[in-house]
Length: 418
Ligand code: UD1
Image 1 (cartoon, rainbow, N blue to C red):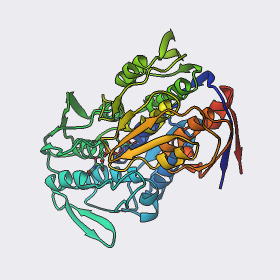
Image 2 (image 1 turned 180 degrees about the vertical axis):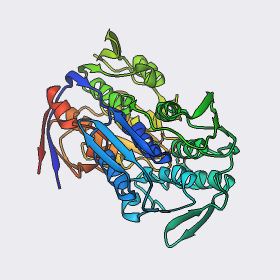
Image 3 (image 1 turned 180 degrees about the horizontal axis):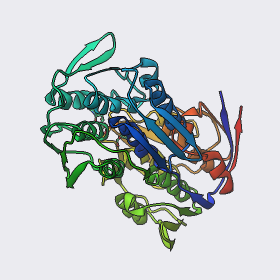
């Protein structure tokens, strides 16, 4: 298994080009199963997760090619109507296949995603809405066995009991082929959901968004269209936080700053300086951190849970009793014990971490445990004296394209060891 060796202390100083969004690429590639035809999707990051999804789609019978960040898709019929446990276990986002496939075909079977490192992540919101659309669902031998007797799914007027990115995406896709007009309330409105909608509209779907209410006019079929994926706001946020924590200076290219409007407001209060250089290109720098008492994660446009772990690192050497509250996932703090191995002073109280600054952090042997938490270990290594070894870095390869190369270009002493 590959490891990462980082020699600290280090600063982030340089230029980083942001890749396409992982979380927008996955549902958009999945949504191509809604229709026969061909399309080309550009700016797809070359990651474990995107490559894995492509293997799932190929296994179902789609013809997919992935080269130079471009995915070419030629879909006719989905020949296999089962998504096996081995696939779903490795990538929970594959549950989003259920909505579009059951909208197009009368039956589909998909393994129930199991538990995962950051919480239970149930799929009740997905299943409740699909049942309302006329899908019969049985849970059998660890699989969701879905079927419908009606010719097309029913359009629904539905309010999600909780905001969910995946459930919103799943049901929007199903509704594009439903019979009638669906109104979905209390939807997730993350930029990644909006990018999916923009792709579906290019394919001929009629969709309108009014705050958290999304209206979809169902149609009998769609025509696949070409699309460019939006830049990855979480990747950008991770590098900005790395620059802030190390008091560095970073130029970020290909970044839609409006996708991180709320977090950037908070970062500015903490001392982040921003200079616009060109279209979608900014210089970020930070000389001193002004600690903030409490930051809470929230659905978009609030502070993203996917930046919570990286945010904690800002307070490892700044401020006392800094509180970060996690409101989206019940158990998203597996990075905390790893951060303590560097000498950090962190206590966990229910869903809130309290961080007290320490004078010195020291390199350690740590283990990557989940995608975003793993990036916080890189930042902690940069704040530490001496050598840090991070094992199980396949987590980072799931979501940060060429992260070791990008960090090296910013002056970080980092090596990938086989
Ligand atoms: C997506 C993102 C992930 C991000 C998360 C929240 C992708 C591939 N992943 O995950 O990076 O951290 O949004 O922004 O886009 N829930 C239920 N029942 C359900 C579905 C969800 O209770 O049926 C709960 C979850 O356990 C969680 C909350 O809703 O507590 C939000 O989860 P959700 O928005 O669905 O996350 P994902 O779509 O899995």
